[in-house]
Image 1: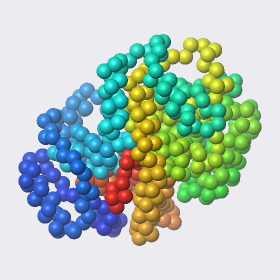
Image 2: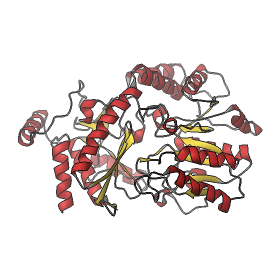
Image 3: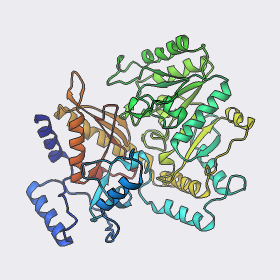
Image 4: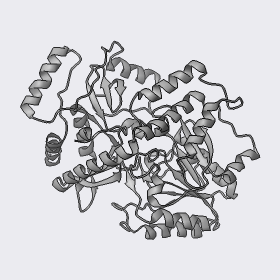
Length: 468
């Protein structure tokens, strides 16, 4: 109980607080309720935003839940004790069925890069949609090649050949297959606590039991996670990398297909890799004949602020880069970028993806790159993210419930623990805090193996006022 009291204290002192609105309230009642609550609590207001959505006339939350239960997979789940029905969104904000505005600090799981319904992206999609929304790569269309050219211009080294997919899972599946074809080996090294997708090969590479079904998953060896907070070697990246060497020597023929790793583990709880780990691990893998795959599905596209790609902060150049999420600002799109030499392996047979390189999706992706550059969103992610991380660190110094604050740019994590010395996960407190923040008008994500980490990955248009 004391922990939950501390949670509520943390909320009231440091976040936006807006009242709960019932669907039966009129606009005047809602306005009055907001004013009364602001007067009573004297808490900061939500930053001003020049947009009000039109009245919503769609199905109610209860009706949507009923249809989900009847017609959709039981595997689907939702956040919050009272599910949120989002009906509209603009930039860094979303609106529910009552017109209430929420600050989106999750960004559709690090997917909304430019901002919800960014006009440049919307206009590019609509323009392409009026021309042709789908053909096939068997015919020519300039959108795919124009976007590929722009995309590779952001990458270093010989990363010059693009294969478009529809998701991060597809991208990682393709990358792992290419590594195996190129090297002639089957074994791949991944990291514990990683998440790379939920298809056949990617589920094998994923290393959290929460996300793995009891199906055949072979050919992947999971190395000790270089986690500076919970790891056995603290922040000594080279000591963690020695486990990669041991896995190869004692668990394989001595030759491997490759290594796949996230620059910052997203689903795993925004875990930064220990300094020096990736250069050492890459060197070990390459000496064993393998290629290095950087999973940039969540950390790519300027999200980390200091660099456009997450791997760049580690001082490495991978052989294959996979990406999705922020690439399309919410449009289903993914990609694999690699060297011409590695790309050649797919010409041994017919490789085909019906929707990979779809004109509408690639038009959106190209628009995203323009917006990121023109609006200097990488610089904004660095500025706002650094400010927010400092503010969160101050809270950590004040509240024992916060065990760790980590991440870069606008990819931040806050881990909650019951005991700082034992690092006991505070799962119930995290759920309570998350639900209360929603009631206050702020949406965050949740992750980590124990479900005790806030994932803060807002649209990159997030402002200093939003950060608080």
